[in-house]
Image 1 (spheres, rainbow, N blue to C red):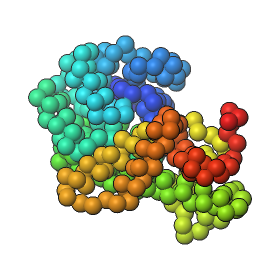
Image 2 (image 1 turned 90 degrees about the vertical axis):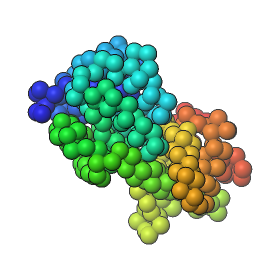
Image 3 (image 1 turned 45 degrees about the vertical axis):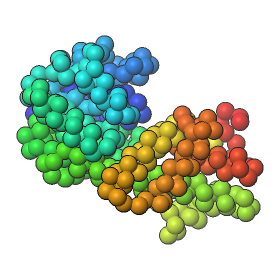
Image 4 (image 1 turned 90 degrees about the horizontal axis):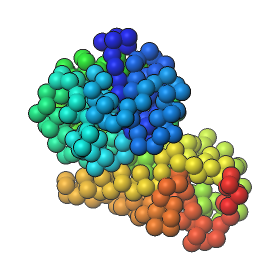
Length: 305
């Protein structure tokens, strides 16, 4: 389908969903959005999109519905709950399920959608806020060929790369789970490294410059440490997201009788940050656990803390 003839709905206009919706608007798609926060819906309207009063109202309009909420429970609610999208969607339409959820939940969701004659692509995404805003996401996608045929133009508009991982729902979510294992461990390790450097008296800006150009760097180190240096903990991805995502990783390991010691340690660090009241801050705020334990002086925060 061409952009001019495809209507797309985005459920969940958080930092990722709003960026995806704005990208679709720029690409010429008739774009509808739903979020429980009025401010997010207003931002979409300012970008040229349309506000839906409920997931059902959005589902009635859209040929392709992208779901970018935070948790499996939220996916279940916006699709199958009261005023959920599924009851209003047309037979033959497509759900692009992009929330990070257990693979078993993705399989279950696809089955229930098929009972309504609705296709699903299991399509978690990576690339962060910048990728969402610029249409440069990586999409880890699995599902039947017919669903891809119907939604390919939409996927292409929001991504730099669509990885076709086969016809089975759950494969996309499994790959995303492994990605989150690495992402969470790298963030926790980056915080630990910077905290140790600060405790040892190394200038944090110099430390970042050296490591970011050395073998110890990672994408997450290069992306998240500047948040710490800027004292900017406004959530691009929150601490509690990694409490949830690393929990999924650990449950996946348990299901396969597979040990995950590094994941477990990183999960405890994010849990400690959440328990300290930092759950809604940017995930780089996990470094504040070391501040609380050792009294290190972090770069001053933008709000003066």
